[in-house]
Image (cartoon, rainbow, N blue to C red):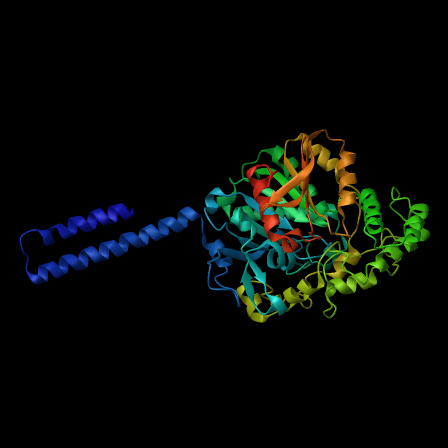
Length: 500
């Protein structure tokens, strides 16, 4: 269309190159040519916007600029609510970043945080792998040069309902939260989000997450896989695989790994370790009182250090929701479904909690963010919800059967682990891999970045496990360059570098 405009303008300007015209005639011709150029360029702009798929609903969700956001580089971002259940008035909040280059050619990557009850806006997006990270003390935002939207169109979802800005008008919804409920809502979110952003329906789709999202991610992948069998064009999602970090996977192996990691990394004494081995049978979900007390002793040893990154300095800021949950985790609760279990968030650093909470509670931020518009939040925005953690129904003890099923289905599946995490440690993850009984294609070996060992990996027949050396529970935060190399390798189906 721009070519047509130029050609038309040249045609109109030809008389100017011919024998001299009167000054009045020349002015008329120039004015007409300029009008046509303006008209065609406007059409071209509209054409480009239509081709990019920016419809009216999308533009309403576009975030032009957030308070404290750096002016450069430019960030194409959207946020808002997607209704997942009209009858109950249930809506989930999202934050979406288009890929930094060639978004039309990049896959769509969904990121979920765990907890249960922790926000993917406050952690995944604003503290870990998004392009805009909350700066120290929540003063503003800073650009993250290792953002994962270098490799993908990046979608963050606050899930389940009741987390972050996500809300319901039916309070009884909050008493029904379990893995199945969360997966169903997340699936409905995806279908409805793709209706709002139809230009991404044909993109390859991957799911990612960490911590308790070790349950959310494979369960959502399984639900998408099953619903895709229906072949409805308007609901088909081009799922290609998933990747999870330091994920809670199997209750028995995760608990066993936590105990062995604490002992092998000199956190607990021989006596505490021997006591746990004597009184605990992790094959049984409902721990005995003796086992509960022995496990409480292990968690007490972590109160002076950061269980989520055992070699990092402990944050000593005032309590946030995550710290309060840690303190209450050792208190028995007869209302818990597994009354002898210790409940604590599976990950998240207190300092980053406080920064995010300070920033996302600012009224001007919420306005620019299209969040909490009618003041529907019952209180302040929290990076982790204590009430969700306390009321969540932990009904699934292992997602390993889903792994076996989706490996056979041919999905690309990666499992990564920061090796300094004491909460969901690499030892338990290795037990999980062993339990799958997969044949080894490439044996345990180091991978490299910047001529240094970045971690180790093993490639099985159907999935890959990777460690990140020196990273804690939040790999993209602790080791951002390694995290970016990891997601780049996963999405592009490449091999990790195995030489310096």
